[in-house]
Length: 240
Image: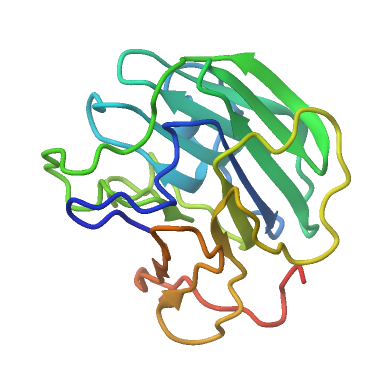
């Protein structure tokens, strides 16, 4: 998903509170980044699941999510200060896990794993959206990328996530503040859904946004490459 020149798509979150949630699964022996470490921008050293990073100092801010030593890492940077936190839950291989991260503009960051609060922290406050129209030396900067480091900079230092991601919902509010039951069916859009990706296409290079958000849709592109010619659609290993 990306922002076209001069246009901010609904999926460009961070100016308000937000939630990113998804289902993930991975095979044993994959995603071998070291033990999860907290600190400024530490999330990028894990196997990257969501990358909305900016090289250098961002105008407003950036954020990202990774599977780091078997735990979920979530990091936010507001342009002058940043912090990454690690879930206190280790995710088991060969199982579907529901992951939700929430962030308030006052800096509150939370990670939920399978409906349970797995980490809470008061991080950097302020606007962390992408400033459309900024002078970007890297062509991939406007993208919100799923499953890889967006700049293709160093796959050894910043490894991609290897596994399955399904049923992604991006919201412009904090959806969860306490333990909850993970969803048992595909999401349906509501007024606060700004990006919704069921990944049911099965073919082609477009990942459809089903949110119906005003100013959208924020369709994604499946960028194919690498030694395994991925990512690939998988109609069998889906959560729903």
